[in-house]
Image 1 (spheres, rainbow, N blue to C red):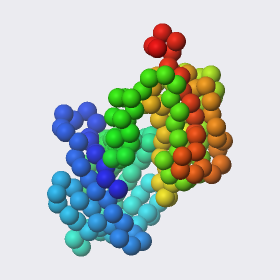
Image 2: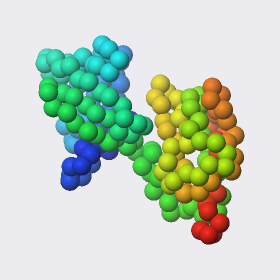
Image 3: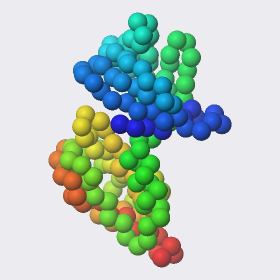
Image 4: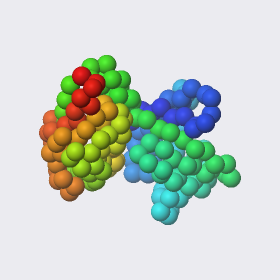
Length: 176
């Protein structure tokens, strides 16, 4: 999986990070063109024991939402935002093509973990509407436009397939 990671409030461009699990607890990580191999084991609710080049680190990862994380490494606290490549591309595509009611479909099979809004509720462009677990990862599904949710086609606990309708958002009447 490829991510763009940036430190919040830092005035730097995001760093491209590729993360590939080689075996259970063993990863190949590429950060800005440099490849490293890492062993990582979760040793607490938010604590990971990481070994890189024979050096062991304790890393605390506190999720602050679907994309935001506070990461504590060797006494340094980082406030990070991580966006996977698929979500970034989808956001760009939906902004270019969005007009009229927008039907959001599942992009891969998964299980609906959480539905965050109700029919009739207003949502902002990019606001999380539901969370789907796919391939052992939780993915927040965001509204492609500002508008009102007019249909929610799934419930928490339900399994979805690629192409299943998840929800529909209509733009405000004055936006059309």
